[in-house]
Length: 359
Image 1 (cartoon, helix red, strand yellow):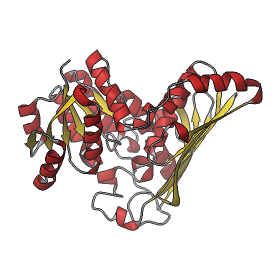
Image 2 (tube, rainbow, N blue to C red; image 1 turned 45 degrees about the vertical axis):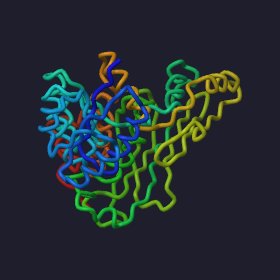
Image 3 (cartoon, rainbow, N blue to C red; image 1 turned 30 degrees about the horizontal axis):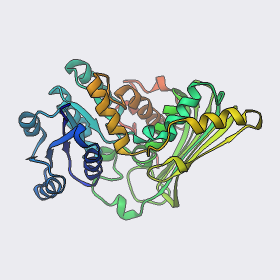
């Protein structure tokens, strides 16, 4: 079976994670080219990962290498333009989170998918660890009962020097603070488990950092299945932690990690009357796969070979992005917000900050 030809646009730190993950997938994929405006950084990346072709821009890469999949690893402000260029050329694209700076841009990419027959996927790797797969399988099978309550806390720490980087902490280039750029991973897993959300009430603050965007947000989210969730996103928390908790009728399932989890990071506490059934399902579920780029990339390649949309699809990513927009809309209008209020006529459709935060 011929390897899928892939390329990388942007050769900074995150591109190294992509290249390492692709290398571990062996003969399934071949990295045929890379793009960066910084010639020295591009050269160092290509030398390290044995990438044969080096290009100064996307157009050159697409014309000369004709990859089947392009990984976009640039800062968020350039995601939309680069992904759109790939899709218009009929090339599948895998973009780092957040896929775009706003819902309007994401909808433009979805339209380009339909027009040009290529696919967009977003990197949300926490969906693909075996712990998340086990939880979803148990929920779908009815073993856990109805979801009731969830906690989704991303309490991380970044010093002021982090925000002083030119493109960070700015609406025009990053699209938001920890709600958009950090907690979005946990929020995506929350949505992957609980499904569609129906209302959010939130606040956002600049509590300790000098930036345009928030450095923390808090939200209460209601879901269509009746569950409610507490969501916290912070970059001012000295003891860092990513924590998700799902309280079902028959068990509590918890995940504590930082930037990626393994099986040992999950805990399950069954209700006494369901202990035997719940624990049996937990022990026999998927195991042994960390929530890594490699886990998601393997599924992306499998989908491309099978002719199905690669995960996470634009529609799935949009549900998470709309929750992010809802958090900002509620925080800055100071009222609860429903998904149907975030359409094209909303100020939060084209700008996550809407008409601007009232700090």
